[in-house]
Structure formats: C-alpha cells, structure tokens
Image (cartoon, rainbow, N blue to C red; front, side, top):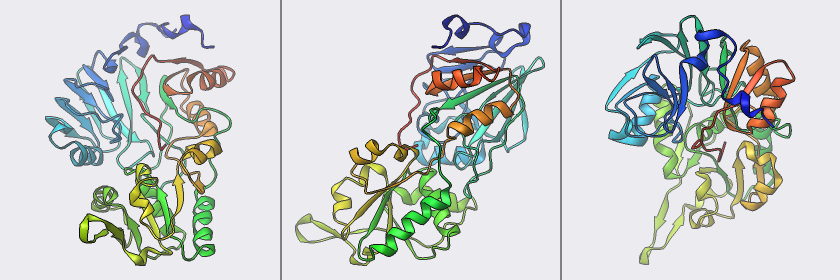
Length: 357
C-alpha cells in the first residue's frame, strides 16, 4: 500500500516544491500561482486542456488554453461548450499564465495531445495528461521532459500489460482478411485517435483499398485530414433503407474492413454487415476475458497509452524526484517507482475513464 502520510506530504525541496503551490480540488489539479486547472472535471474560469478526449476536455470553461488541434477537436465535439475564450499554443511555445510559465510539449497520445510544463520559482512540474512512448503516424511523438515532479496516468500499470508492436497486430488483421475472404471485418475503434491510428497503420502496411467507416467516425477523420494527417480512401458504410424502414448495409462490404465505434460492433448495425467478423483495437484486448465479454473474435492489442514498461521508463527518463499518479493502477506503479528510488504518491482524483484505451 502507498504510505498514506506521504500522500499529503509537501515534498522535501522547500517552499519552491510544486506541492507547495498546487492542490487537488473537486474540479481537478489547481495551480495557485497561475490561477488555472489542468484538465478540470467541472467548469472553471481558466483551464489548460491536454487533449480532446471527453474525460479531459469537459464543456463549460470560460478560458481554455490548448494546442490548435485540441481546440479544433473540442469545437467539433462540444460546439459552444468548448470554451468562451480560447487560446492556442504551439508545441514548445512558452506562455506566461499568472505567475507561472507554461509550455505545451507533445504527449504522443492523439492529435494535438500535450504535456503541460509549468515553471514557478525555479521548480518544474509536468502534467502529462495521457501519453504513449511509441511511434504513431497520426500525432507528434512523446519525449520525456526534465522536471522535478512528473504527473502521470497509470491506465496500464500492471506487468501483464506489455503492448506488442503495432505492425504485428495489423498483420493479424490483414491475415484474417485474406483467410476469410467473404467476411466483413468490422473493427471497434474509439472515434478520436484509435480509428485514425488504425487507418494510418493499415496504410503503412501497404493496405490501399478503401476503408469503410461508421458515420460516427467520419467527422474526426475529416478533422485529422484537415490537420495534415493523410488517411487515404475512406468511405461511409451507409445503410440502404428499404420499404418499411428496415435497412441493409451495402453488399460490397463483403471482404472489406469496416471501422466502427466500440458500442456499434455489438449493435444491430453491425449484424447487418455481410457475415461480420468482429475485431476490437484496444490495450484491454490483452485480457482475454474482456474480449470474450464483448464477443470479439479477433482481439487487436493496439493502445494509445503507455504500457507497464513504457510508464516506468518514461517516469525515470524525466529525472523527476517525485511522481504523482492521477488515475489507473496507482499502487502498482508507485511501488515500482519507489524501488527505483523515486518518491511516488497517488492523487485523490476521480473522473478519468479507461475504456477503449
């Protein structure tokens, strides 16, 4: 167990330590000298948002600072709720916010995702948001940022979660398609980040056929394209509505690859596909029971989060003397870091989700 006394300790670097000028409130992590929250869970006056996933980019803030791409994602998903006043920052650009200096740096999670470097009185705090330390053709690559305190997620912080190489998982999908030539391969993929990465990895493997999309995936794929991420020939997997209101999916989808939100792969929509073979792209597919529960025939272990080894390596590479853990398997990661001489503690924060990671 994590030492409960240590959870509230202010650190041992004196008054300049980030624990002296930050606090966890119901809204999230608050930086007092800057007057802002990082990824607040409730509407606040000033927010810095690391990326566009719904558990980090909440509606209703007054002022929002984020990358240009994250702001675009927020506008696409939240409309007028994306923030009354929006300020875009480029990677590496330093902005003074209150008495702090804030710099956004790539997190490698999804398009526009950023780590937030906060500097105050000589101390450096990095809030990573969600991140992964492996190459992704659809977003800028993560790099560890030297700091005194590193705030990390712990979604896959158990030794069982060691993600395989993406190329091998894509090969599994393509091999299955060649083996089952008459079946439509419908792949569950989260709308922001996972779907686009899966498409890009297929293209990198030489797959140049049209890729068919559930309608819910089309807008964000178009947004990626608008920001320079080339995805190739994408087509809507539309339903032809017959008399009486009943529909059928286009017959030419037999033998093709169709991407859909995870919620749709077990829906009536998927059952209309020609002899569908259900696949799912997620780090959780490492757990066979999860695949069986969702009726997945072809689990693809493809995640936009760092795995067990990646989390530890990234925390160590920052050189941080202390690591704060926001959500996930906090105790396992804290123990692994402590045996490496890094002080670690879990922040009492709830509201960040782990589904379809």
